[in-house]
Length: 607
Image (cartoon, rainbow, N blue to C red; front, top):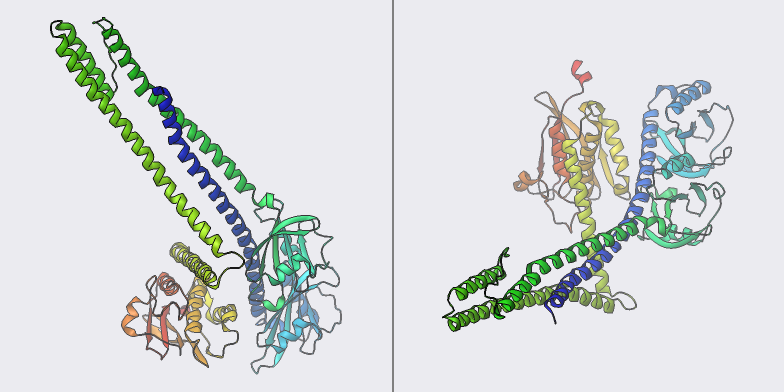
């Protein structure tokens, strides 16, 4: 076998192993791309659900603000309706805003129709008046327009607790969902809004014929109704088109029974993954071709041709041409040294015809040494090739072994232990995801631009408590919130600070019944207001108070109370950006009080 063939085989072997490993890696990467595509689909449907939730929250905030307007303190229906008409102009996302008297009679109407209507039988009206939560949500089809609207009702009560009237805003769901369909990042995607009975409230784009139809007990309805943590499902066919669907509910408003679904055909969803795979294989092929060509060129120029020069010169010299020389250029390394040594030997042999045997012996010795060096190089190359092959196969064997073990374990149904393993991995992943989100939020809070203005703490705290309703549902909590002063600051940042402090108070009073949470103002310090949030929860040891506001610092074990240890660090950063300070006083099992200082509103300072 010639040296050229040997070198070719060695190069082929050296490039084959990376090619196999690279191919396996690319296939694994495609599986990861597919999973990423499904995660992006899930993220999109959750984003739309969160935006709709935020819109309902905003409607609740609008209701809360309108409830304080003096324009409702009038028996003049026309004046009241004119006021709501002006409000509707500023909020075109609603089809109408109206007020309903406690007996169910329509009073004010932003559309100023002057119609007489009793709404006692409406579920949203009954829930707003009779439930603890003053906010009620119900999807319906408009009687006149035939389009889906989300009725958001808010019960306004007097100080005595008696109902004063019910504010109702009708959110145009068709218009709302149509605008959201234009933001989906998937080609050919559809977005569907469905109620708990399986009625299609909205289908965009091109779903006018499906609006108002029922898909009750269909695969799509069953998936939307009973997905139970399975956010993505493939192969659900609607209207002759099979799509991959993702679903999300509105957990803060379960009584509405709304389900948001986003469907994408498999080809459209995986288009990017397929393009990435094709591009990656093309890149791998080009790289391997370049590596093979480069290795072959180096082997040809650096080894085979130089060995051929040595052989030709030796053959000429042994044939009687004592002027034969290998000549320059000589490559570096052992082969170059051998060539120089041979040329030097040829010169010595030519200068002395009287020491032919000695020179021949010396030449033979040198050739033997160099040949041994070449053999050593070949053995080292073989050993290196074996080592590379062995080391690259070991991870593959490990992977295959674990895959086989997993396949053996998962025959039929997963064992309880395997389910626990998967649950632990899932919980760890979610905790890490939450930790990343919190760290990003913590980082952004330090860079975000402040929008300072006078902030009504009464309204802000009530809004925060309303946003935490999912955590307080079913709890016996005694709230003590006197009239709070206005402060100067960024509303969104202060809302985040109160959300963290009140959320902690709700969490750490979980063992108490009743839980007692108080928000108040205890005076001033250096011209700043001293505000506080107090609870009767589990508290903590004051000797660890210096660690309380550090990142990742926690006073309780994770299996007792959930959290990432970033919330209070975020609060401290927010208060510091407002020029204040925060500290805590507590005792174990005797509750905790968090004090912080904020500037008075400028209007209060001027007074």
